[in-house]
Image 1 (cartoon, rainbow, N blue to C red):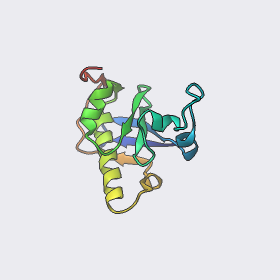
Image 2 (image 1 turned 90 degrees about the horizontal axis):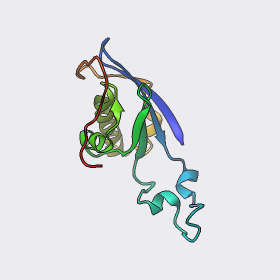
Image 3 (image 1 turned 180 degrees about the horizontal axis):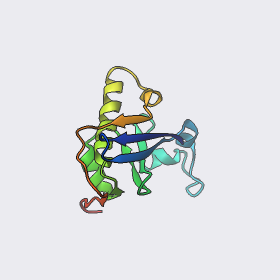
Length: 138
């Protein structure tokens, strides 16, 4: 898995630290050691494809995160996973979805290499504490 850390702020109020991870070509080709009869690589067998931007987004402060398929609706995707997040997680995830979508729309399929080390989200609301997303049914 290739990784990248991005720090996010909303001025001098909150500070989020996020680890992003994406599967490598080797991981996309890995076959199951349990289902040895399958000729399909493990990640494809569970419905994931390398043509989609499946990305691990981990909140380094809380130690929780999930694998998101970038490009959907960040709030709904975050509710689905019910993770404990810092105040900047959802604004950061919204930024990441928009960043990826904009880069791909301009023909940049390798948007990953342009990721910054820090972003400022001046419109993100201030909060003293993180929280666990309520989410819907598991």
